[in-house]
Amino acid sequence: MKKIWWIGGAVVLIVLGLLVGPWAYGKFVAEDDAPAAVVSTQGAEAASGSIDGTWTVAAGQGDNQTSAGYTVHEVLNGASVTVVGTTGDVSGNATIAGEKLTAGEITVQVATIATDSGRRDSQFTGNVMETSTYPTATFTINSPVDLSSVPTDGTTATVTVLGTLTLKGVSKPVSVDMTVLHSGDALIASGSIPVTWTDFGVEPPSLGFVTVDGSGSVDFLVSLAVS
Image (tube, rainbow, N blue to C red):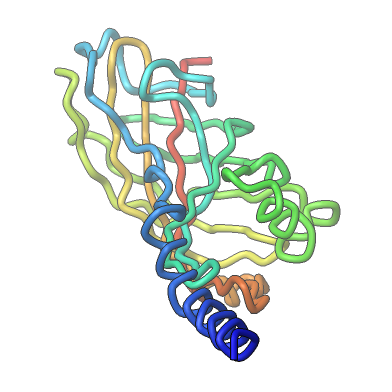
């Protein structure tokens, strides 16, 4: 009789583990990542010069440090989480004339994008993005953008930018609402580009223990200095 009770108890524990485990993981272990960085006006100053000129991506400072990456929702071990991958390995430039952004490009070293999970990052740089073959992602301005609405008092403006996003060797036209701040001698911009991954030949992982949504966003915050 004791043996029967022992077996029955073990079965109950296994069932409870299967049912409660994912819930407990989601409630006590899995957490959403901090959202991608956006332009911050904390400590912003009045613009110290003209917005016209040739600008180059710089490291930035404070809350406005240059970064880029992605945001995606996934179900991991039964828990629903938002994952944000970022890197500071970003380069680029912009040309502004007559208060119009006439040219610009941002280049991201995809292999350096990281989350809080080395296992996830290994899958991302390997099977998902194949960074040994496609090491960079780029965003290029397609048409002039009017920046005359950008204030000079340390506050922001939002402008719509049409451009081309290239991921994994596939280029597609995109539109992004970009927040722009002209603070002191720095020009800072951020945006989030909605993306359906398969449009760029990117297959979201579905590995049993993890399922990644078919859409997400490519995010960036760039601090630029006059060249």
